[in-house]
Image (cartoon, rainbow, N blue to C red; front, top):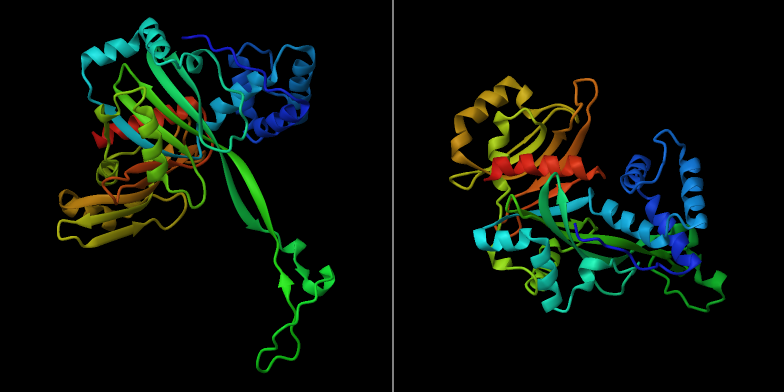
Length: 363
């Protein structure tokens, strides 16, 4: 792995923001991230004790604000994502080049972008999407390269508790009395502007020729445009044309024969373009536990195309009593916008495992 020291995040205000960003994540994920980096943190600590321990590390200089930023960037890239899956088709020579850490370093030096490999930009909320790092590393003894962007996403939400009548604000606005109205006044509705920090990542498992673009979920986002913009930027580094988008719609059609997921909703299209929709009777019930539906679907299984699905993918330790799973939405209706949505925040290990399994149904 290419070592990646991080730049200082700067002021006390930055430190406060970073701690807030850090503790937006599950406590167990924060603990594991610290332990992975060599910090002695007990898994049984209360949330308050964990925060106090981290602040002590900061005060003593054992942990820097920049290292917290590095943890935040890692944690925010897993779960609560829209994910496009790719297969690399560029051939053996390119694979061998990208596997070689020395070659990668020299290549980035030729591009005058070596700083992406050796530093993590300390930006918190950039005005525009910013590429902050490119890490060449090994995961489960397989070489990867991961490009990470940070962006600020701003939205508004109603804040009715701050609504005010014009007269209460000292504004003289003459109301236009509607027909039949007894009284009328102008009321200003309040909205709260909310800015959040979003992570976008392109992760390529070089050994397996498997890649994915992971986009932080956001209401109203145009994921296809975000994807296309990031791939355009990646053309300056990678042979983007050699990454083939994997059609995840195949998962919908093939998942009936699997017991890896609880099938909540499935949408199909027949060869005659008619639609077929199925939904289970309960949040933890599988569609195909209904024997009649299972038999009916078996008869037409080879005559339908999967469009979309809502699944609960079983994680290690799942039982009939302990439903430890990961919410998955499959969007396969449009050929150019085939993607997977991951629900709750999870560990990198679990998400990588689930996505590996999903690939087996799609290729």
